[in-house]
Length: 131
Image (cartoon, rainbow, N blue to C red; front, side):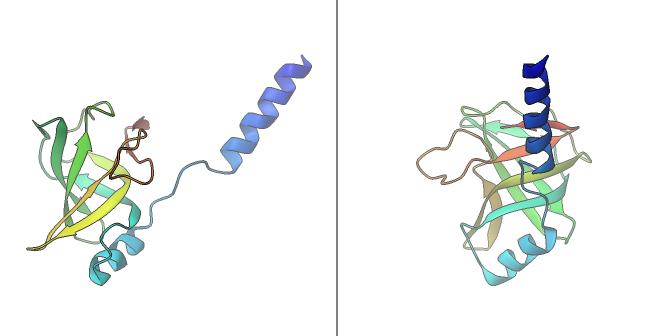
């Protein structure tokens, strides 16, 4: 019984501390305006098109609540695909990239980091995390 109490107390501490980043939509907007490619971002988004699988990545576009349209490159060799469709709501945590053109997107949305991803990321959809 005592072990159960300790386990519940530890679980409460983890939940109380949050454990995951919360969306900062204005922070994303500022990073895009400032051209801060490589920034770690967490934001709310609406899926614009159904995902397309290409080269071990699930690619789709989203519209952030601040109006920006971003490409999401979700590595399906390191994380499970996200069962989404146009119109679905997501929270995305990953690394912002701004390529010439400009082409704006987010990658590193997986828990297992690769050589180009300094921090683990994730996508939340329907209260499930795909990482």
